[in-house]
Length: 99
Figure 1 (cartoon, rainbow, N blue to C red):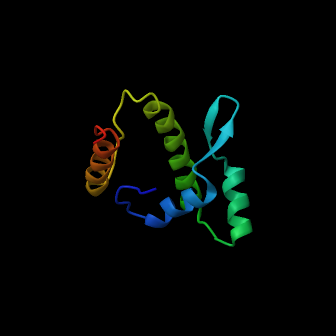
Figure 2: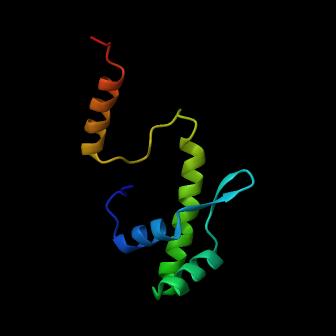
């Protein structure tokens, strides 16, 4: 998974390491402060208060985006230009008529 350019790239890496979302009764939900604190203690990554908060906020946004973009009526908010090209080629090849 790739993110758009971030001011603090480690926050994105940590979000993925914690797990960007958890399973809830109705689908994906944001990670909690407790989850972030447990991850920090178990991995030995000493987070500052703002870093922990950034992970929680990013997780909330991630969970909300999963819901918004899951219905396929919206384009993804960000995708690297190189992946757009590669994906287009893969889709064309996948749906090309058999010869």
